[in-house]
Length: 215
Ligand code: SF4
Image (cartoon, rainbow, N blue to C red; front, side, top):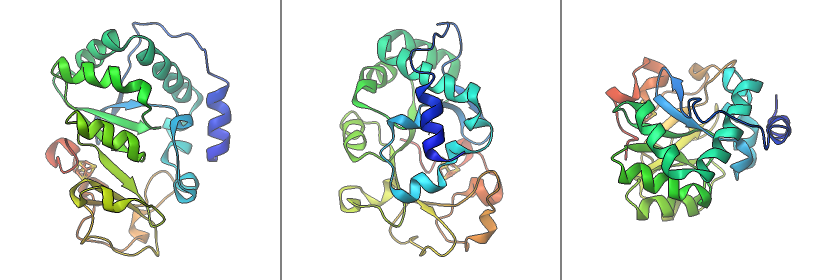
């Protein structure tokens, strides 16, 4: 599936009903519980579209796309209830934002509630406006970049997460973490090792044992 096909699939699920008792979060063996959103929310670079992690593997299956669309709508409509439910599902563990997709301003009431209720959000965005909004309320997200990204001067290097493909330069001196291109049918060993590599990719460490990207 390519990025456009994923968008078309998601569009078909807009307005789909979900039970308020169904889980909001998704399990991820590396990152723990994760909020997965539609890629329709994204503002991707050309490179990001080409290598989108949400377009292959189980996260791209129709069930996962339908859930992402339905959860996105529901948390915007019921931010307080949704925040309570997400915290309950996380059961004391940090909540990773944007396992797929990205945030919109309409998600802010939900995020504010998570913080107000003692939840611990962390995660990633590729939108500068959303990164700044979250930063202003002390949710220090990682800002996802690739070699074509702009506005890097607006983000502290400690918050930059670099997606590196084979042939891309080593930016270890100016980013907090490098993600060698990986995923279903993508072999990270084709990307040279760098000092800032995410330890989960080559050494299978869990985020809870690393915490470099936590808020
Ligand atoms: S650098 Fe650490 S916290 Fe960040 S994604 Fe990799 S394992 Fe998780």
